[in-house]
Image (cartoon, rainbow, N blue to C red; front, top):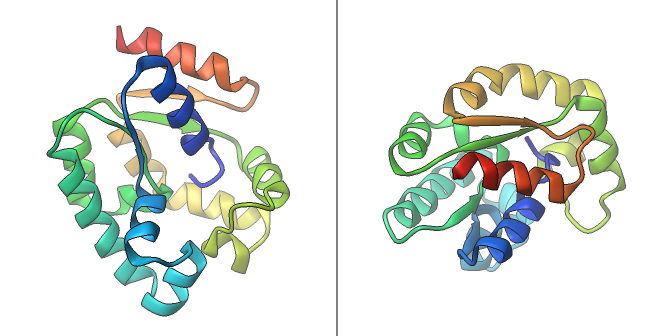
Length: 161
């Protein structure tokens, strides 16, 4: 889910384990030379999801990386299958209340889907729609509501050993 801390955790984990991290949203935005909100406006969410999937699966085939994927990556069955086949998937789970507070206070990262629907109910509905995919795709689930970033990173490292 957006706001769960995927990008931040991936950066910290990358530094700690000395493994390159890839943020799929940022990587795709860089290739297209557009901001995320511009991608959704100019290409549509559907086209973005197609490009996201191609970008993700092509990168998975290369050497080991830590991925911070967009929250919608699980909507595509090929992506879910690739996650299971090529690595370990960690779900950073947060309540809609926590996600809402993080997103509403994040002035640096615009999330197109949230920008149109800035309310907690929207996040709850999104979670309910994606929940089954997230859980089935996850090898390990971490509830992040009350944890600091370093605690989450340490839990991931412990799980991976």
